[in-house]
Image (cartoon, helix red, strand yellow):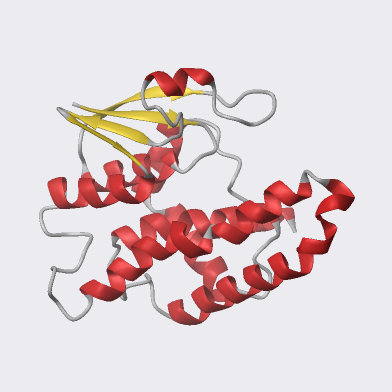
Length: 212
């Protein structure tokens, strides 16, 4: 039985969604953010970094959402949710998988942390905002009219990149990035996404268009 160490409002929602898509049984160990929005110290009992997600599957313990997504797809995907290694599309898929946390998430984290500095963080805001614009534009244009980032089929790249869209939409909005707005809604409408959301508990990174 797979165990997911799940922190509310975190990247571990990716894992619950993927497991629902895969139809794999799992159990959840819940953790709740503290009053300053940080993970509780109990998570360090599962992994020294104290970050979520962490998955346990037999003797395998895997931290980092990208690594967990890759492992679950390779182990339980039955050839779905990723192009075949060596195929013409695999390297692009692999690039998207690493891009999500390696590049795309960085300016949003910088935005979050510098906002805590008040006036001290203001000199950095134009640079950070320019990076956010760069990445959202890149994703919006790359997606185009495709249903998914790799074309017509859901892959691990979508599991990774949807969280980036959610983070952007909940913090600064996706106005002007119509492809990403429609895409994010499509992902949210998937039955497996809804099941993962129901099992994971309150998730504040979803913004409905009625909020506008």
